[in-house]
Image (cartoon, helix red, strand yellow):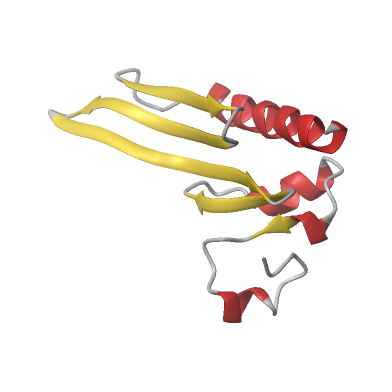
Length: 111
């Protein structure tokens, strides 16, 4: 349980940091969505830019079977590497946005 609590806190810290960078456009809001009961975590952008609706998931992380799954990374940062730098073992980080076949060629968990 302590490991899960640690992972939850590190995910929330990382997403909060990313959200603090904000958007270049003040009309687009960065929203954090934390579901610590079901272990789903997202950073989304919501708003308007030049009369066009902006809505999209920037980062989506889950905790499944004791591992952090990076489901989507729409940033320029290597989220998996950042998590490893925060002390999470690479064997507990899964790049879910890669196919199972491709995951075997990374330093991170396959699943």
